[in-house]
Amino acid sequence: MELLMQGKRGVVMGVANDHSIAWGIAKKLAAHGAELAFTYQGDAIGRRVKPLAAQVGSDFIMPCDVEDSASIDAVFAELKERWGTIDFLVHAIGFSDRNELRGLYANTSKENFIRTMVISCYSFTEVTRKAVELMPNGGSVLTLTYAGSVRVMPNYNVMGVAKAGLEASVRYLANDFGPRGIRVNAISAGPVRTLAGAGIADARHIFSYQQRNSPLRRSITIDDVGGSALYLLSELAAGVTGEIHYVDAGYNIVSMPVLEELKA
Ligand code: NAD
Image (cartoon, rainbow, N blue to C red; front, top):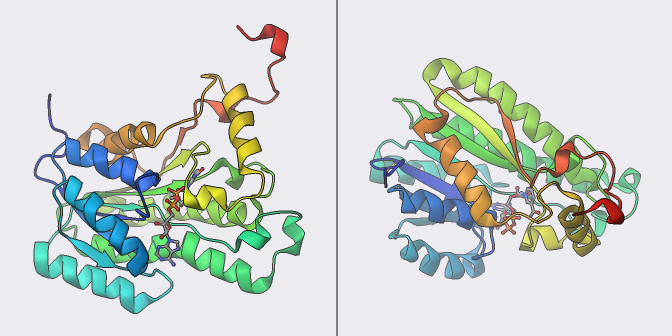
């Protein structure tokens, strides 16, 4: 098998446990020869990330809370010291107060709006700006988004607004850094049962509805996302930047539920 990431080094931000989308991506990148560093939010998550990192041959894990710029700066200083340069970065980070991921979007508080934007949207711009300093030979940057950015999904509320901003950031960053050979893309994943996913009210209903009504009639796995991430982060996608790539079993193309009697 050709190893698509042999000789490449990069950082994966957002593994919380072995259900995390970032973990599905990390496993696939490591299987293709990538050398990985990980960031984690807080000591409790750090204790879970350490053995996962070890599973993919990495002892390079660093704390990072993206609300704190000093903590982001420390991560990139350490990357510079240990590796000098990197080839890729994965940003799989999102947060909003779960009390506001239910009911009317209109009731979003100003405080949670700002916090959601900082963590789920602005942090991608901040870490990309730092990452490109370590990419003198070009590179590839990837974030995770959800279709609640372009269509109304029940209870996704302010996260949808943050993801819309995140997707616009992907395009602006792709344009900023394209001349330096740095590609910036996003994967728009279908619903996956993760810690973050469980914060959305009625997540189970949304999950099973998309499972029943997507063209592939199934939900997606973190391994599905890993495969598409491998493509976007490797030279296979050398001509792709500024793209929002759907990995959702095709759900985004469907406008109406398929009638039971017409299902095969
Ligand atoms: P997850 O809970 O496993 O991962 C979310 C990560 O965000 C965690 O590792 C958490 O520690 C991190 N995080 C939150 N606030 C942070 C902060 N202040 N500083 C640093 N890290 C912070 O859940 P996931 O579903 O794997 O989420 C990863 C990404 O995928 C998120 O951007 C999410 O919005 C996106 N996504 C998820 C789904 C889904 O259905 N689960 C679908 C599409 C997109």
